Image (tube, rainbow, N blue to C red; front, side):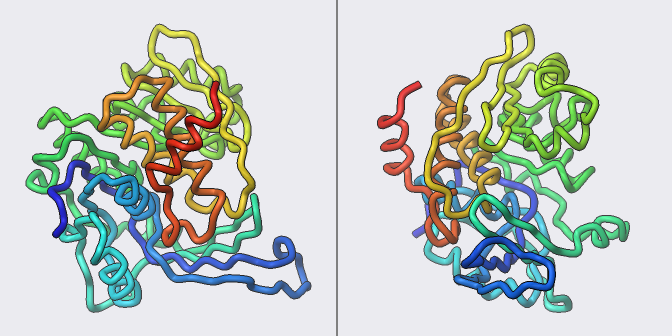
Length: 303
C-alpha cells in the first residue's frame, strides 16, 4: 500500500530512450556499438521522483501529459513504488513527449522535439491543483511550464509549503520565492555569458532569501544566501558510468534535504552525494540511489 505523499513535484515527466555506447562517443561517418539501451521514465521531475521514492520518501507527481507510447511503461514502473502518479493526464490520441539520449561516460547528447513543442503555443502539461499539493510538506517545481509553474509556486506559498526549483533566472518569481534554486553551469553560461560564476552567484543571492546553488559539473559547487559570502564545496569523486540524470538527482537531494530541515552545508553535501551515487551506475531509473548508499558515501568522505 502506498504511503501518503510528503512531497509534491511538478514538471517534466517523459518516456526516455537511452543508449549507452561501448567504445566512445559518436563520430561522423563512423559505426558505434550500442552496449545497453532502455526505455524508462525520464524528465527532470520524473527522474527526481524515482530517486526520492528510492530514498524512502513518498511523493506525488504532476506535469507533462503522457501519451500512448510511454503510458504503459510509466504505469508499470511506478506500480510498486511510493510515487503517486494519479494527477498525471494520460492521453489516447498522441504518442506523447519523449527524448532520445546517446551516452558515453561523462558525455551525453539528448535529442527530442522540445523546441517545436514549446514554440507551438499549445499547452501539453497539466494545470496544478491545490488539492494535489495540500498536505505535502515540501515541493519541487520545474520552471519550464511558465504560468502553470508559477501557479504551482503560488499555491505552495499560499499553503506555507517551501519549494525547490532549478535553473530559474535571478529576476524570476520562481527564484525570488524558492527555498532552494539549483542552477546548472550550462544554464548559467547561457543566461549570464558575460559574468563569472562568482558574479552570477552574487546576482542570484541578492534577489532571494533562499539558498542558491551553482553546480559546475566536476568543478566546485558555489552556494550561499543574501548577505553571505559565497561558499564552495567539491563534488564527490566516483567512477563515472553515465552522467544522465545527475542534475535531476541533485534536485531530488535538495528536496529531500529541505523536507528534513538540513542546514545549507548539509544540503549541498547530501545532494552532491546523491548525484555521485547516481552517476556511478546505468540506467539510473533501475538503480536509483538508496539512502544507505548516500550515507555510506557521506560518512566515508569528509569535508
